[in-house]
Amino acid sequence: MAVFTNLLKFGVALAALCSVVVAQSGCGIPVDFPGQTRTFSISSSGGTRRFLVHLPSNYNPSTRTPVIVAYHGSGASATGFEPYVRFSQPAVNPNMIAVYPAGINGNWQGPTYATPGVNDMVFTTDMVNYLRANFCVDESRIYAAGFSNGGGFVNTLACSRQHGGQFAAFGGVSSALYTDVSGNTNCTPARSPLPLIQLHGYDDGTIRYEGGQGRGGPLPGILEWLSRWATRNSCGQPTILNEGNGVANYTWDCAGRNDAMQHYRLYPLGHNWPGPTGLVDISAEMVRFFSRHRRP
View 1 (cartoon, rainbow, N blue to C red):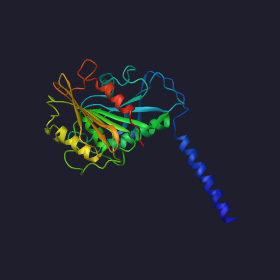
View 2 (cartoon, rainbow, N blue to C red):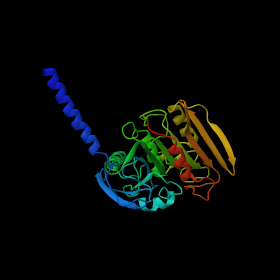
View 3 (tube, rainbow, N blue to C red):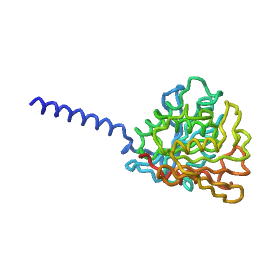
View 4 (cartoon, one colour):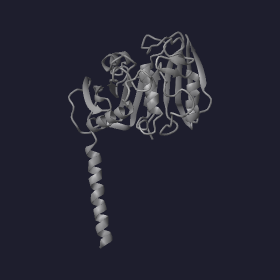
């Protein structure tokens, strides 16, 4: 009888836990802005934190939807970054929710110029939890992308066992990799392989391709940094395709997964996010890359 009573109590507790999990899902919550962008805010590290949410026009509150979180560069804004990267444009990203967080004083943690005491990884997790609770999010298909300081912060997330594991893949352009200069001291990924796509201009005078001293501290060379990620991801040797017009495309197969890492080296290209008229439309390439990867 005591065993039966304990099992009954366990069943009630389990049912209560399941109801909490269901209550935390945003599936079924109606929204009135598919095809539009709205501003949201939460309280997190750094105080009141703001972010933009763009819902695809085909968003259905009963259908789990992938998410791209896009981090702007230093000194920029979420509002200005949205048209720059075009993840809100149906021609580039027809099916994923696009989220544009705002950094404190226009920066993300990592470099010396970032605002002291602000933990943007904690903010990211708080923001993703808000998205989960208010929108119908596909938990296996949440992605992070960033430019410059934002791209470096995306790598900081990828290197975080605690905060990076919620993402399925990562993307960066002209990434300022201040927190991953050498070795693995600051990098303990949640799993391996961790899909990664990165583009860098060979003529980037701000975040140099060969590495060196940046405005926020020392920086690794891009190929050396990619080589360390290839080791972390148990990759083979890259396949290098010189596409002409100054475009070199590196791809790695990692731990049995095809195209788990990808890198574009562009010449000539400075410190920019190339768009549809450039050598590579990296926004469209990222969406395609992300679409091939799910979090296990």
